[in-house]
Length: 394
Image (cartoon, rainbow, N blue to C red; front, side, top):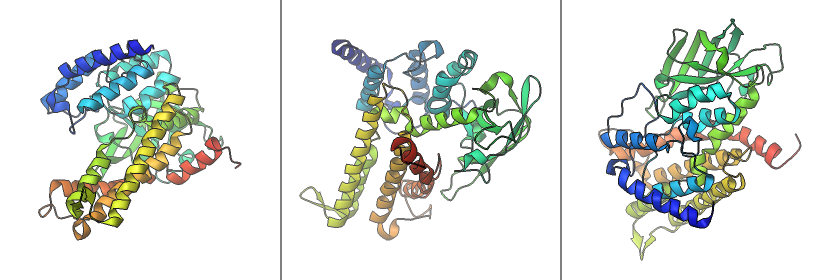
């Protein structure tokens, strides 16, 4: 797109956002995930979602025929920049927009795209991921949940674990074994199935952080229709791997870079806790640690932007494993530093004695200890980087 045309788009986008983004949709706050089981209480959040759905900007770079905005990569970058300028939250953020949607766009049939993508774009459905099983986490290809051919559908039996959001999801994308005699990376298929059926049972798992975002999910003759097999039968490992690349990249964060909010809050916390002299944090050791974090965070932002520019706007391939490793460890560094700066009041757990902000920091500190494990452990990601990015021998 010519520079003049892009500048015209920027001005039009800026004017539309100023007029249509409600005050309550700017800054931190609730974001819809599309679940039919979650009521959006906040009026501004509902209004923002309605306006963005109408505009096609819940999924700005998806084709218009599937409910998207049809924006080019350059236009998408401009939109995110302008949203960031006024602090506008995304109107919709879900596994549908970031994981299964991009996968179906790339690898789904036309029928699958027509049936599933518009509903994701209109925030009418939330998805969950049926990958990990007891004993099959990082070694995902050892999964044992089976799907048997039953004519016009498959019958699924087995168990998944750590299924994020399964308790309020409408649909699941799942990896199942369809040929038990094949080598473990073969004989796996990728399917879609509705969660609201008798054959699916969900049991939340309470975490040390106090939340229950994860679940155990049990399948007892659960039904997946034949038309919801994605890719070829017994070739689902390829589809499943590509979806993980979409998950690890997060195109919105790749284009806009990781948020500045953590860096700014870290500096503010350091100044508040440690004091400042002549505008500098009054502790040499922590000042150096905060500076190192800020520099590493900025390096991460620039690497993300470069990756999306080199990929012509599509999700990068194995390089997304670098983002998973570095991003998860950077997030752990942030919360470790936040907790340590609070001294003996850092790892608080007494809800009556400490503020909501302090409790939220501790819970996030506990929660993100798992960041280097979920979505493929960092050990697995380093193997992928070695083989597929650096080209090292097995």
